[in-house]
Each structure stands twice: as structure tokens, then as C-alpha cells.
Image (cartoon, rainbow, N blue to C red):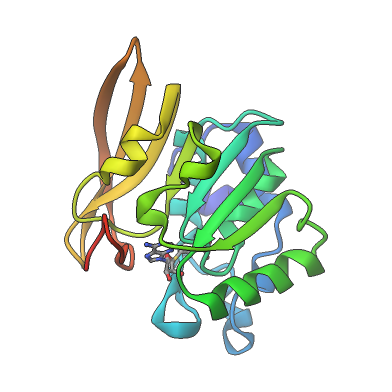
Length: 204
Ligand code: SAH
């Protein structure tokens, strides 16, 4: 997976490649899909949601430019796989999930791997960000939003980075938003397809 799907397709950050190689993806997919855990695909998970394709996880992680010891806010815990990859990068992760059953399963999976110290899973509407712990230096949204959610922009720290898919329910552009010198800069970096971000500042 690391050599063919990631390095072979342009992921160059060795820390990202090492993190992707160290997290057992088979521990995050539903039992009947374990044989497909390392396929070059997103896979369906519980509650009609999905675990992202490995390449997308690596690409978003690279764009986020995670620092060891840094804090990351993730919106859309899903299985907890992306959070585990961020933890493997040395980050301390607060991950927000709107569906309580998915949050509970993700907590179990993360605890079984011993990464529950580095990842806190919270049930809430992440389209509103996380005002209690703002400002945020790094924010990763792993569900597709109709437009840039105002609360996430407001909560982005100076020097901060936000990686978020923006578009329709089926198809989005991955956008890297940075705040520097008091200004927000938006850069579309490529196409992707995520399940919708559902919430007050997402799809209704
Ligand atoms: N990062 C996940 C995949 C995310 S799938 C992984 O590694 O497995 C997208 C997730 O976003 C789904 O679990 C969905 O329930 C969640 N989601 C959608 N809208 C949300 C919102 N407003 N706040 C928090 N989570 C949301």
C-alpha cells in the first residue's frame, strides 16, 4: 500500500509514509471487509458512512503538515483510522463525530490499539468547529461540505491550516485554507469524494 498507492502516486513526506505503514488498517474496517483493508479504495463502514481511500488519508495528512506534539482537530471520526494516522505522526487529536454509535466503535478500536491517550473522540456537530478549544492550528474535515463553514474559519489560528473537501454531495474539491498575516488563503488542490458533512454549517 505504502509503496504502490502512496509513494508511487506522489506522497513524499517520509513521516506520513511511516505513519501510514504503522497503523493496521484492517483493525478499522468492518469484519467482512478485512480482506479488502489495503485495497486502493474507500470502503463502506457502519451507518452508511465510509473509511477513506488510503491515498486520500495520506494526501490530507501531508497537506495538514502535522508537527509532533501539535494539536489537531478532526471533524468526522468515522472509524477512527485518520485519527490513528495523525496520532502516529505524534499529534494529539480531538476528533468530532455526529453519530454516537460510530464514535463509540471508534473509541473501542483506538483503545484496542493503545492510541486512546492521543485521541479524544467527542460527539457533536463538527460543522460548528470546537469553540471550547479554539483557536485551532490544524483542522482536518473528512466529510464534504457545501461551502467553507464560517465557524471553522473563525476558529483557525494565525499560521493555521485547514484541509476540507468542498462541493456537492457526490463530488468535492479538496481545499487547503491557510491563515497568515491575518489573511485567509484558499487553495483547491484536487478532486475527491466524501460522504456529506451534515450540520448547521454543512448540509442540512
Ligand atoms: N475520517 C474517517 C472517515 C470519515 S467518514 C475515517 O478515517 O474513518 C465521514 C464522517 O463524518 C462520518 O462518520 C459522518 O458521520 C461524520 N460527519 C458528518 N457530518 C458531521 C458533522 N457535522 N460533525 C461531525 N461528524 C460528521
